[in-house]
Image 1: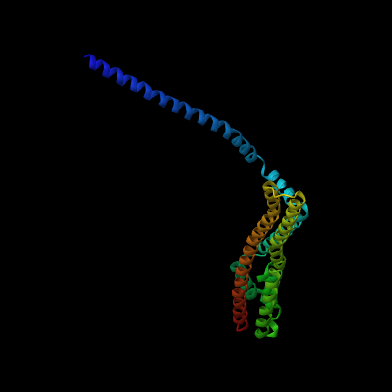
Image 2: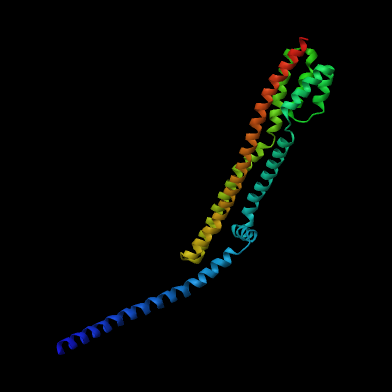
Length: 262
């Protein structure tokens, strides 16, 4: 019995000493977590404040940091390029007509009122298709060969009218990143001049100069990407219009040929 009592007391003492380090370790973990939470809290608050800044104010701040001298030309390229692109999109959209309905109306006018009625209908209808039909009807009395040549020539004219202004958009697409790269090079030179004047290499000084210099490149690339999207969209609309012009030109020659045989 004495040995049993001594054994139980020994086990109890061992459990007590074993629990004390565990309790101490637990207290240390809790203290460490509280310290980390205190350190992270200001960072979270700072990120929340940055995330809470309105978008236009953030853009304005980056614009000023990049340098007005180099960011302004990039912004002008974007604005002028967008203006030309929007004008082309509106022109192509407003010149679009229901081709099948117009061809049917032109054929009916030709059969009922003759070439003058068809010519009048084409004159009063907007769009490149109607313009080609007017040119074809205008030269009907000169022969079908002359009509075919006039339709082909005027189709090229209409194609050129639709592509007006695209060269300016392509220019701004190439010019925007070039101006951005130039601003970056100038900014890097200024950053190295500051390092030379300071007489030592400071991580803060180098990082700040490089960040400001790269903002112009970023702005130029963003402007080029936006203008490229509009440029490709306009080209797609022009291609579809050209295919429509060629198809309707063939239909016009067929209609006038059938009318001449009556």
